Length: 147
Image 1 (cartoon, rainbow, N blue to C red):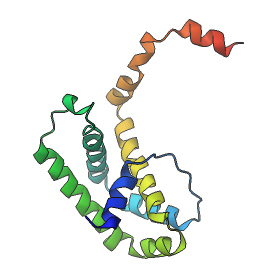
Image 2 (image 1 turned 180 degrees about the vertical axis):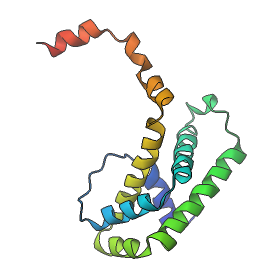
Image 3 (image 1 turned 120 degrees about the vertical axis):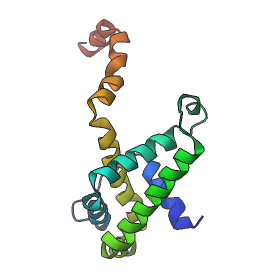
């Protein structure tokens, strides 16, 4: 697999908390890519991230995804990434790559955040993420916070 594709895959799965500057070329690239995504594609990226995370050896037993499902998702995302970089945002890609060796990584972190937001905007998902609260000892936590 070419190094650029490996980097793109790694970047999509890395932390989504990197901060970027408004006039930074990588921010412009990321924003161009985000603007070029439609709702269906954002959901496709969210699905791809879920499938990638579910490949972890300790989590895979909980996933019903077949190898065909995973391969189809990989193909779909590969086509989206190719289009974003070569059709929708080639000028932004070129400039960002010239100015910052980490530009592509930063741009894909922005795109990854959008995909995660797609997952997190679902009410059922948010409820599932907060269900743990009913098992926390709020009194112990509050006692530490009020000292």
